[in-house]
Image 1 (cartoon, rainbow, N blue to C red):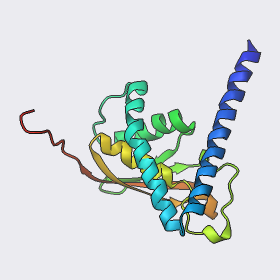
Image 2: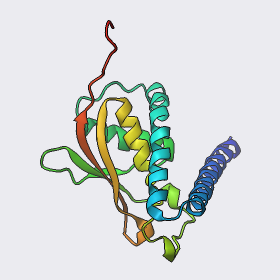
Image 3: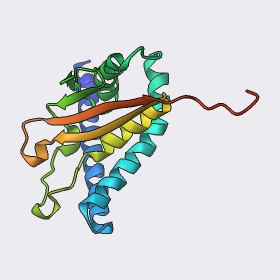
Length: 179
């Protein structure tokens, strides 16, 4: 019995490492295809957005979570359920703004940056910018416009990785006439 559980653990670790290495290959190819880091950052955000738009359906189906009542509840669901489900980590939700419309997700361990060192000539590359796009795309599909950006990154020498999220507005559903 214990042998089977070891295989499951090894399999998850192997899948995680494969994902990390595949993501690294993607970022490397983007760096070759585009002339500057800003363009690579835009492409990572765009790819992440497209993933988020599709991933939200899977998340809602697998998690059985209903509509969140406010931005604080949304933050908790993102940290405690979504990040755990898809990346195997649980960031802490901190640094709320006084208005309650902005917070930080603090990742002690960002699984996307395992095995990664940024070269000196890519000092403005936001390596994990795909995550910002995923969060933005997924939340847009549940009628929330947000601004998402990295404010700290362990790849740049910071102690933690910090993703800053700001609520912009609730998106009204525009139904076609007659519906």
